[in-house]
Image 1 (cartoon, helix red, strand yellow):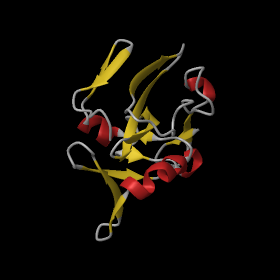
Image 2 (cartoon, rainbow, N blue to C red):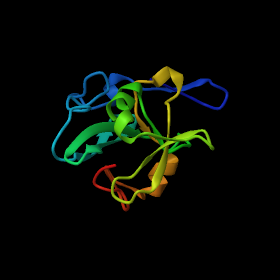
Image 3 (spheres, rainbow, N blue to C red):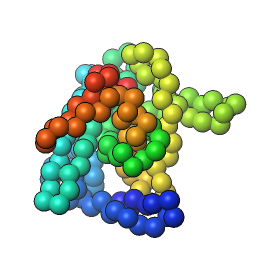
Length: 157
C-alpha cells in the first residue's frame, strides 16, 4: 500500500510485514466474517523502525450480527473512515447512507446514532481500511508506550 503526500508523491509504502504475522494480505483471518458478538481489538504492531496502530472493530449489520474489520489508524489521513471495496460490500446495504444534498456518504453509529462520514481510500490502496484523524480525534485516541486506547470508542460501529 502506498501513502501519498499532497503532491501525490509516494512517501510511505506499507507491506504485509507492517501487519502481524497472522494477517493474510493485510487482513485478519476473521475479518469480514459474520459473528454473533462484536470484536474490539487494539493491535500495537511494533517493528524495528516503525510502529502501526491497528484497530479491529465490528460493524453491526443486523440485530444480532456483526462484521469485524481492521483499520489502520492514520493521523495523516484527514477524513474519518475510509472503507475498502470489500468492507463496503459487507456493510453497504445495511449501514451506508447518502446525503444527496451534501453529496457525502456516512454511517450512523449503532449506539448513539451520530453520523460519521465515510470515503473511499486513495485509489492505490483500495484494499485497506483507514481510520483517519477526524475519527481518531472524535473517539479520543490515547497513545502510550507500546499501547493505545480510545476514551470514546463504542464497542461496535
